[in-house]
Image 1 (spheres, helix red, strand yellow):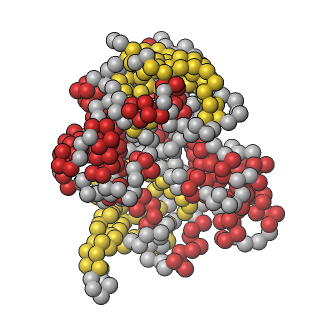
Image 2: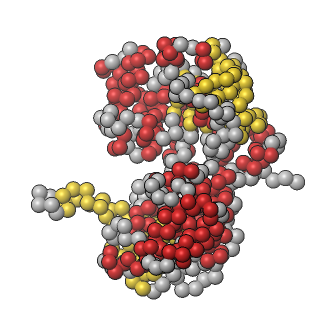
Image 3: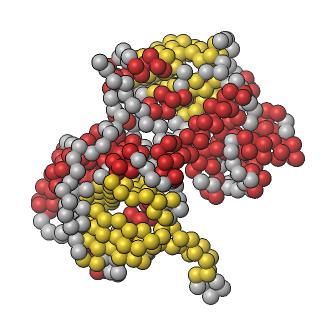
Length: 533
């Protein structure tokens, strides 16, 4: 196959700093998929953005190297020439569709823009092409979605719109930067299969940037591994997975979550019992302000949780996973019975429920968004103590130090601020904030979804260690079934607010009884490390 793109000895730096990419050399042939993998900060996205010169050139520098597209050096191309190539011959799917799509423009306007710029299509012609593209990427009744704004679409639909925009002009090279990170397993598989089908139809090459090795193993032809800005290994996919040469590559492959919890807690009286939990939201009110239409988010849900036990809750977006967690914390109104250690707490008002908040804590999905940037780590972790256990400041500081030590952070770091830490460290801070109150139950809402696999494995190990040490009970909410399998003793499967399956996690993973559970597990991309003799 002819070489489509050749990156040769590329170095990238910002302002006068050291290179963030140093001597990168890779190539992509027409019709193939090259995966670029590595942890956050390894230089993957920066390298991809440099192909189209999308880095801020007031700060970005290219001390050396070339980026040849059909033999033409993109680093030397004029702005006019780059505009001719961007979106037409090379397109890009960005990592977060919600921030990449313009919230003020409809789907039709955003797709039509690239058609107008590169193909001169306007009016009915552009509209018809938009419908064809939305149909191509699997959006049902595409003509009804043309007038939709991004906030009216689900995560999977937004990602499909991004793909439609990227494919509008049938590019020769598609750069896909973490295209499935925030998607449910079923939608993730649909998007990846869609990209592969379109690749075969259009004959385009794909540069796939991801930290998910399961995706790489299934969809890539070749793999390039980056560590701290340097290319450390480059090989055929099967060869790299079966016989990795570099220690860093072996560490990445070993970072997949373990298969199951190491021990099952002894059975006893449940710590948390939930019976017939229902949550509904008002979608329309009458002229007099009364609710006239409802959306049933959770319907007649029942489960129990023992001491030292983890309940995994899985399902697609909108299935009611997070709503259940919020209902347990009385952050969302609900009906039904919620009993904590035999005490009925579901019917309590906010004032009477307040003492129980220290016994049930939550760790949110986005650690950076849930940590105040204006508070130091010590202030963040101490805040709950000051509310629930006002008293001696020295005692509070001792507990903060202990909580930070428990999650593997240097206590001296308590005087720093969240922006000074990595994603994995920020998640440890969030766990310390929940842990400092010595709760009995911690609700973990997608706590590892934005983390690299190596960091995920560290957090899983940390959660297991803390659980064993303090006999904590977890409710683990996630769409990542590999992580759920690594932590959960019980599994609750939700679909559209209904419980589809509930039981021992190992048994459900081995032999799911319901069609929807089977569909979820079939869609999950579990990577199994090859056995060695």
